[in-house]
Length: 285
Image (cartoon, helix red, strand yellow):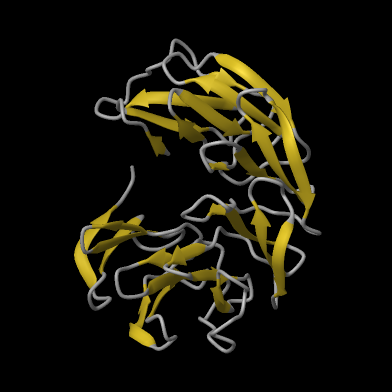
């Protein structure tokens, strides 16, 4: 779900109604007169820029909706299924696709600015550099790329051991990414050189690494949390939550909130200081 500054919660349905909903964050009541319905289900969260909601659908279309009403402002058909949340440098909207292309859409002209073939499906979102000049992302071509945000040209690419599913994380000048075989990479943002050639958590990784002040946390399909210092050494011992973890944890103060599938509880809290599982959990109805 995406929480907006005016108190809306935006969430798309993967059910049969193909609807994107807006509800009040405090009461759960509908904010729009009716949900926005597409022709297929929603996989990615939308992106909010100002008063416009950019929503990518599994039908290959990027929809631009009015935040206040949910009404369609305009749309752009791009390609195959869109599974990654769009990102922006403040000028263009960047959308990844399963058709192997990374797209850049001009929100003023409502037209495609450029597209770049990355050789494999791209389910994750492109990460925008802090200065907006570059995009970073991996694909199912077992490669990781740095892309010129203005033109779409490849600045550099490096070979990886397996598919990249998630969005990378950036801390300083270092990019952190993990593949579905469980390999973890520490890549220099300037040239893609990997400083961690042999760091491998126990299990497939589909979630974005979580950046802490003193390291990163990676969650695996095997139900573990792994924490590493910037030099690749262990920050704290692995933590077994149980079940399977596919989604990126959330940092709330000094607590790491983790959602697991098939675990005894739906939501867990882990200390970011030492990895201890805190006496706090949540179960749905």
